[in-house]
Length: 196
Image 1 (cartoon, rainbow, N blue to C red):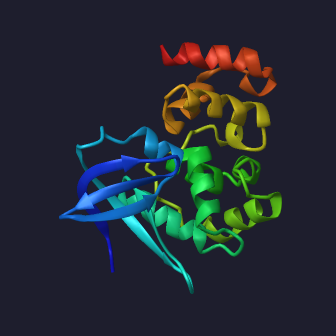
Image 2: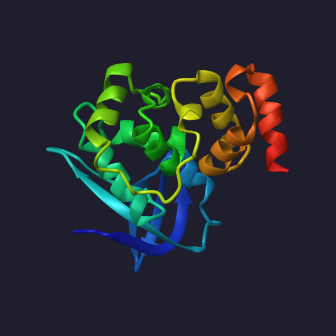
């Protein structure tokens, strides 16, 4: 079974890349946050891989870390979450954000992922809560900040879009006093100041 592929990055497309490993070109499907971390074409790259085998098709999915691959595998173990859905969740929240959302039962944040409905998001939380415990070393002390507040979730997502990690964004929002009662623009501005 394939664990990882190490080679030269040959090509980058919308949602897939090609890695040349000893003269064999491997096509890997990746999501946006992986694309954002890629080295320049012609540089060496190592990605952990998951091989999906269907009756008439085989696909390789690439991940920057072993932990991220294992989280992907946990997500696709949930009924109703396929590889595309799992990639969508990881792309929306990042690995730490997915684990935080599961542990704090924030199914609304998971449901914001493309192709994931509210019922499936709830199933992700219910089925994986015990399986991801301890997967990250640090959770925000003030867990209610992550609960069901869509404004807070939107601010975290906006900060992530600026290039901050999900964990950094969560910490910044947590440091804002009265975050729960702020509107989106006020909270975004206050959280952004925490980054400086």
